[in-house]
Structures are given as structure tokens and as C-alpha cells.
Length: 169
Image (cartoon, rainbow, N blue to C red; front, side, top):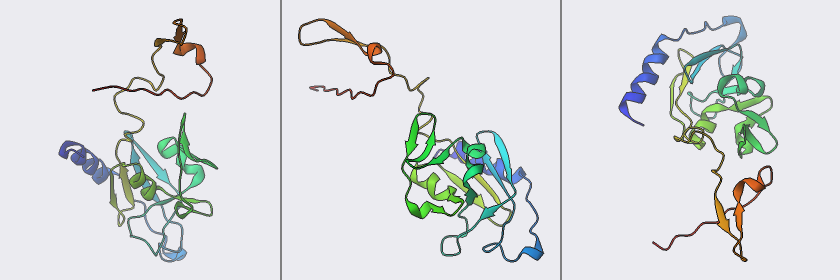
């Protein structure tokens, strides 16, 4: 992570409003508390989060149905999915209706800055979704088949395929 990106995340986290703790609901590890999640130039206010007392205090457990509002991912049987990307998740990241967002961010290499006391979590860019490509659609290339006729990649659109490349250098 570059220093400039870190400073952007930290400065955004310092301006996010913190939600008050409800004294009647008990300690934060056992009760629902409010939180603010910063991601992709927006702040998402959550009315419930969970914490795992066995793990680090900066772990953020969000409800599965809040995940699409936060980062566009959705928990499915095959993993956490967004568009055509599905990332397998271990059972340890799931607990009932809750999902460990900080563990997921660490798994995919997403930077996280947390102020658990102020209940603000800031997540950086997801490299798997960025990366500088304009789209994840392969360009239409043509290669010769065994008989020498050109085969276009676009003729396989909508079908699953494996493209193997090799270079001698």
C-alpha cells in the first residue's frame, strides 16, 4: 500500500461519524452496536454488527444481507461473489447470519484501517476488481486450428473454456 493511499483512508476514517453505544444492550462483544464502513468513496452506516470475542478487537462482523451495500459482494454457497468473480470463503468467516468482513479483506489482500473504539472501518481498493483492465472480457483473438483455419475467441462467447498459452522466452 502506498503512503498516499493510506493517508486518504485514514483521513476519511477520521471524518466519519461514530455511532453511540446503547448502554442497555450490554457489552459490544455480546450485543448489536452501530458502525460506519468506508469503501469506494461512500460511507455505509450499519445498524447492527457482531464481534468475535476470541479474535482481534478490530474484527468486523456484518450481516450477510448488508454485504452488497458495503462492497457489492453477496454470500452464496460457492463463496463471496460479485459479478463474475466468486471467492471461496472458509466456514470460520461465517457465523449464523454474520460474515467476517475484515478476515475476507485480508484474504483478498484488501487494505483495512480500523478504529474499533469509534466503530469506523475503512477498506481500500479491491485489486481483483481493479487492476487497470477496462473489462474482464478477453479480446477477440484468432488462432489457427489443426487444419489452418482461423478460430475466433468470440465464437465461444457464453461458453466456459480454458485458454492455455505458452511462450519460449
